Structure formats: C-alpha cells, structure tokens
Image 1 (spheres, rainbow, N blue to C red):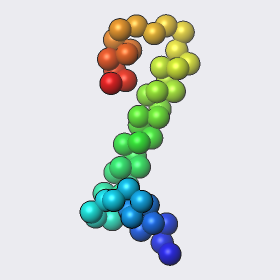
Image 2: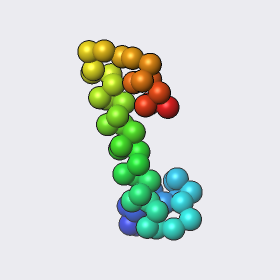
Image 3: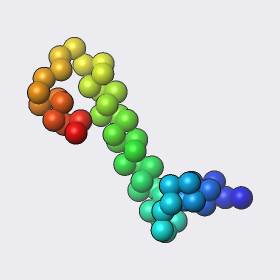
Length: 51
C-alpha cells in the first residue's frame, strides 16, 4: 500500500495532496521548537513564537 495513502488515513486528511502540506507544516513546528530548545536565551518573544 502507498505510504502517502497510509498517512492520509492516519491523519484523516480529506485529500492526498494535503498530506504533503501537513507533513511540511509539522516539520516546520519541529524545527522551530528545536531552535528554541537549543537557543541560549528564552524570552517572552520566543515563547510567543512557539504558540
């Protein structure tokens, strides 16, 4: 079975082309979180950016 179709089913996406957008969005959030975690300073602005 196609991996994209499997992910589509797991995340309950209505269209197959939305799967790619959702995965990219997820990785953007992961990257921003990792940047904040390894940053030397954590300010109120940093916290707001993560929300």
